[in-house]
Length: 413
Image (cartoon, rainbow, N blue to C red; front, side):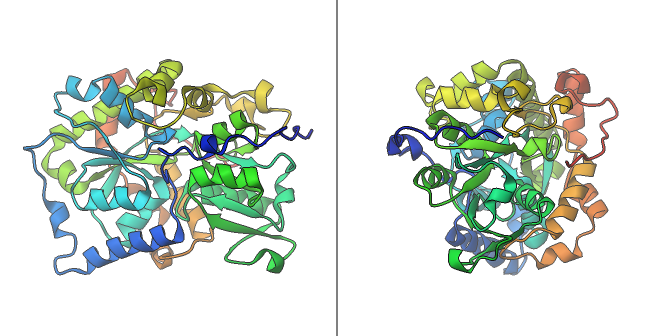
């Protein structure tokens, strides 16, 4: 695999870590401790999550999000007024700087609908027993392993440090799957001079920091959601070693997460919410450049702090011609997009997610994983009633490139 040329000069650091950027889909160790404390303290109170059973219908829909490409359907549904078309009164989506703040607002009832890392949904429902469910997928694929220009193979990561956004993320799961395939072991908290030849040190790092850390050489690579992979490419400080969707075909990353109380007590309202999000996914599939324009900082909408050129690359730049030679895309026959928007939450994916997470190195509360049965979780974590109806209303499975049976077998390379 040919090496890319080193950049002639370091990019402007203001481009690497935009002052308006957020922790976006990452948690530091301190953030993780905070989230664990939030979840643990409330669940230990008398009555546990009793407040989560409250559902109020006398206020507008409130949406919480992190400004990453994963949140596009929630934001486009607002920008295109799809919520209003479904008869919903809605506030402008509220931007959060990191997962702990978003989750805290959700469990406190300050927001009604969020996008959330699929493995984190497991942590919240089963690790902390919070009554909420996945009602749809927000998107599929949309992440990549980005590395320094001198890294040409997964084996080159041996003895080096790679950043991940969170232990309970699809990024951590897929990275460790890749490492195992190459005879490498994931560890954390090990000093560089103590790493064994076959070990890769994993660190939790906010995505804007990942781009800067890659540029200054403090990490060899990172695996994260877009548009931070596209940003490294545009800044010419890193390259895509592997797309996660080329490892696990059409995998979910972020999901639409809602409280059970709303699903049970306000089914028509819940249906309208899901209808709007699914309608937005269909629109994005046909309007990728338009989506980048809506969400870019140049639009003045304040949805995200990202440049339109970066978002356009994240939403559209893909294919064997662009990535086949460098090995980032090895399964062109899968006929996928860099990121795509397919709302149906396949039970087979949820079951496989549980199985893989059980064999993935994580820090923090993970004992609950030992008690989880993949088949049970596939039926319990997800409520697909609303998304099935929404897909039908949007024109059927074919609109999203889904099989009419809404079943599939999971494919991991």
